[in-house]
Image (cartoon, rainbow, N blue to C red; front, side, top):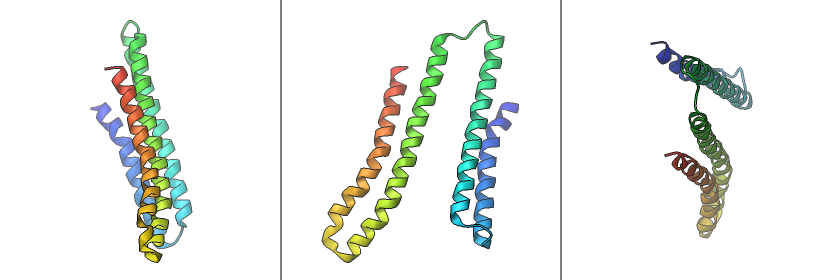
Length: 144
């Protein structure tokens, strides 16, 4: 039962921080920039908490067992690397598309012939996320 509660804590923390940031921006107490900064801080704190919880659980499990084999540790670190590759490339792709898409819409509204060129720049941003996904698939397939 305790492990289910520990799994729910990060999701609850992120949800509460999202609601808090939305309400403070809607009321006008904070700017959007400070709300995004608070969301980034909340994400980092939840990531650290999740990593710490998993490390403590792994340490407790390895104490009860004789010793953890190096294959288990390598597989765990490879899963962490695959998750980071997907997550960071997804964030980078989102930032790229977030900057390129409005510019593409503006260019298309001025000159409809520029649609094809503008679409290429948006697709390049999405390609970054796909490359991260492919790298994580390669990492995961190495240990299966």
